[in-house]
Each structure stands twice: as C-alpha cells, then as structure tokens.
Image (tube, rainbow, N blue to C red; front, side, top):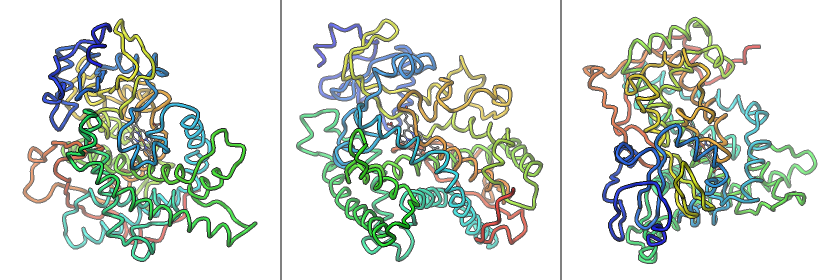
Length: 497
Ligand code: HEM
C-alpha cells in the first residue's frame, strides 16, 4: 500500500514508521496533534494510522473540497470491526457502505423515522422527560445539593430516544424481563467504550486475529447481550401488532421499521438485523452527542457570567416566569441560539468528523487521493482557525448575533458540528431540539452557580475523547429554583396555543 503511494501525488505529511505509521504522534486527543501537524504540513495532509492512509482536512476550504465538491468520492465509511460485529455486518446507517441500502435508509430516516411529523408527534415525550429532570434537580437543589449534570443529561437523552424509538424506557425497574436496569446501563456504557476505542487490528490488519486488546472479544460479547435485548423489543412490538389486529397504529420507530421490513415494494428489503441495527444507531449516535453538547454549553455559561446573565434575561423577557420554555420558543431566543453555536464551535461533539472512505481515486486541490484512503475532517481545528474567527479561543456568543446567517446545517464550512454533504447527521433536527429545549429549561428554572469555593478561573475546561468529546471532569453546579413550585411537578402543563 505504501509503495503504491509513491506513484500518487499525495498531500504532504509526516514520515511514517514501519508498522505503526504515525501512531506515535497522535496521542489520546487525536485532533490536537493533528491540528499542530496541519500548521506544518498544510490544510490537506496525509498521515498513516498503522497501515491505513488518512487524509485530514483542517480548514473550512479543505472541508468544502472534501465534503461538498467531492461529496460522492468520500461518501463511504471504512469497514471497521465495530460495524461488522456490533451493527450486524454494517446493516445500520452509520456504518453502511455507500450504495442502494444506505440511500434507501437515508430516505426512510428523512421521510418516515425522523420526519418533521414524527418529531412533532413526540414533542410531548421530550417535554415530559425534561420536566422529570427538572423535578429531580429541584429536589436536589432544595436540599442544598450540588448537581453533577452528566448523568442527568445522559439519562434524559437516553429516555427520550428509548421512548421515541422503542416506545418505553428500558432503564426503568421492571421495564423488561430480559435485562435488569443495571445490565441495560452496563450495555450502554460498554457500547460507548467500544465505539470510542481504536481497535489496533483495524489499522494493522495482520494483528487482528490476535485481538491483542481483547476488543473483538468484548464487542462480540456485547453484541450477544444487545441482540438478546433487541430481539425481546422486536417480539414485544410484533405481539402488540398481532393483539390489536386491524386497529393497530404504529406508535414508535420500531413499529414503523417492522412495517417497512414487510413492505414488498422496498427497493432493498430491510431484514430483522437491519431493524435492530437502526435501533442501535439511534442509541449510539443520538444520546451522548446531545448530552455532551449541553454539558459544554452550561460549562461555558458558568465560566462566562455575563453571557449567562444575557441568556437568562432573554428567557425572562420572552418566556416570562409563569411557564417553562417550549420548543416553539427557540426561534424567539436569538442569544440562546448564539450560545449553542458558539459552544458547538469550541466543543464539537465529534471533533474529528466520523471517518469517511474514498470510494474511487480522486483529485483534491491538485493532490491525488487513492481509493481506499480514509478521510477525516478536523472540525475542532476549523472552529479555532484564527483566519476565520476573531479571538478564536474566547467564548463570545455575540459573534453569532452579527453573523446570524451562519448556521450548523452543513452549508457553512467554518461550523460543522453535524458534518456536511449527503452523509451529514440525519438526527440534526432532533439533536437541536434536545439541546435547545434542555438548555432553555435548565437556565430558566434555576439560577446556577459554581460549587462553593470554586472560582470561574478554577473551572477546569479540559476534554477527553471517546466516541464523543466530553469534559474531562464532569460539570458540577449549585442551583436555586427560580419558578413557582408547581412548575417542577412531573405533571406536564398544556402546550401554549
Ligand atoms: C447534538 C447532537 C448530534 C450531533 C452533534 C451529531 C453529530 C453527527 C456527526 C458529526 C455525524 C457525522 C456526519 C458526517 O460524516 O459528515 C453524524 C452522523 C450520524 N448521526 Fe448524528 N449527531 C447528533 C444527534 C443525532 C441524533 C439525535 C441521531 C438519531 C437519533 C443521530 C444519528 C446519526 C446517524 C445515524 C449518523 C450517520 C449518518 C450516515 O452515515 O449516513 N445523530 N452525527
């Protein structure tokens, strides 16, 4: 593979070592050394991860060339062990190779599974779950307890996804006869551990059969447990459909998927494994991403009290103290929107966009990129590029009030938290709703401050990298309830007309 590369005019990059390539340069927070290397080798550079050639784009222009101008060349994903062993041999959408199956899946997600109509139908689920979280936080703050947000935010997003996709919360006591809440939680944690780890055998293939890290063994074990659980979910849904006969109405994503799986007009039939793989996609791609984004936005606000005041004053003005913010309020909260964009600029949930694979030889900016090359876009570096952003390391939401046309929907290449092009995140609508609704409610319902004795300067803002990029140290804060007590009860209020 490396000999082959001599005949190509590849983008420049550091000299690779035998076997490991440039792995020695990368470290745990890969996007940071990659950013440093790009300052030396340029916005389009080649690095070797083991024996896999990776082309990294580190500026908005490079991202545009890779994700828009050459969208079709880089639309595939690499075949990694996780897709093979956990996602039913790439039967999901995230890891599916480019082709008819993936195209059909995208269409279905867009028109059926996560359509505007489906999102609207489940608005009450998001409201109820946010309210349940507020109730718990109210109880904690009445007792003067400091709140650690991470678990609350993760459980909120998991509960919303579980209810929208599978019809109920599987973490609740007695929710399922095949797993205990503890077992389910273990599976979810394990899912993120394997999703966020590099399997050495994927980049040094002759090591794969040895499974030196135990990665394959772990993934297969998790897959067996998950499969038992997912089979049970599918059986429960099939049983309800049988029981209700002609009166059956699809209530959640699994119901819809099972109907689609039986549709003889499908271009490519969705098999039972496909249904299970799509469920897994929503859990792995749709829970932690939103939770991590909200935790970073709260952290930046606590570190920047002036911005926190502006956000809460805006909520007071627009929503008033008699009710909780709803999804409909989002468009009337420009400062909150700016806070979210600014936070996503500095702390994108996936600092290196999920890997793409070049499906045919391509030429980008005069460099040739051979088929099979992996492609990564360093959105973390793009978000901090001083030629695009003034004072790039400062948290300044106001910058988006002047640039309100810059959004996160994949058209502005300087801000790509959801990626871009035909492979960009299909969950953007749901993800944004969750982030906006949760953040507005947390800020409106409580006055937050750092734990006693901690100054703004002492709030640690280091990150770590797993599947997503969470805070290294989970955020803690003390909250004081601001609204009338009945607004914290779990009973949902009626939606404003
Ligand atoms: C704040 C929340 C979220 C963020 C920041 C986020 C970010 C991303 C990014 C960066 C990608 C890769 C795009 C690319 O390759 O260009 C992606 C892909 C994907 N996301 Fe999201 N996501 C979020 C929420 C969600 C939700 C709620 C779901 C589903 C319920 C979801 C499902 C997916 C799937 C299935 C893919 C793979 C698409 C494909 O390969 O065709 N995401 N997401």
